[in-house]
Image (cartoon, rainbow, N blue to C red; front, side):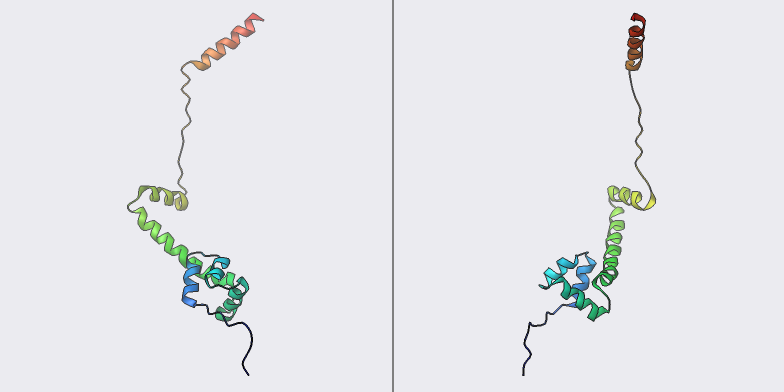
Length: 120
């Protein structure tokens, strides 16, 4: 007697891990494998003995490391990236100097206010 029911969805472990590495959401991964989010979570419990969230953190962190490595390499040739990384990791920031070049405007205003007071 053959089993009835839906055919089992095959999830390729290597593809799944790569999708996590590039920060795909659980919904996007489910769409990729043409299944439900629950199926992804259940597959993770069976395959990794942990939830999707726990599994995702592990592989997503590898993606972040890879991205960071590429950014540092790019900073060697790109000043904008070097500045960005300096702000992110070294606490560097742009300093804007606020100066006023009033060209006598303030003196004129003070004089006008003094004249108003005298005329009262």
